[in-house]
Image (cartoon, rainbow, N blue to C red; front, side, top):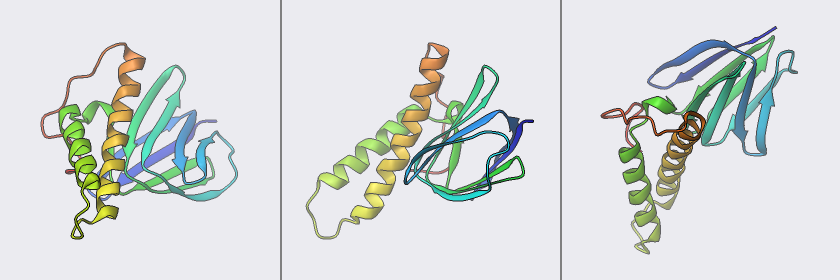
Length: 151
């Protein structure tokens, strides 16, 4: 009895698939969802969402959101979401560098919360790409322009 998963971001429907397991980051730690999981509504933290089906795995980078579980269905409403293979690595790395530089400044006009959120998005993207690279044994080619907007 597989789980049906829908991942929706503000800008698009990212995926709709049937999987065996969902792994996601919440403020309380990582959560795993298997078929017949108890109903649940939780916040999602920026990071990876991993969808497993047999030996296959889809890795998504999300920038936070909500996950609802019930009746063998998982709905993820993400602030932004990208499949690992869609991520432009150079762009994500540059976003990480910009966010770190902004956080290192001590100017009163810096929006530190916005910089922390940008850093979390960039790190989620890079983490998702790294997981797919390790899984496949090579780095996936970057997609020009990426998907999901700037960090």
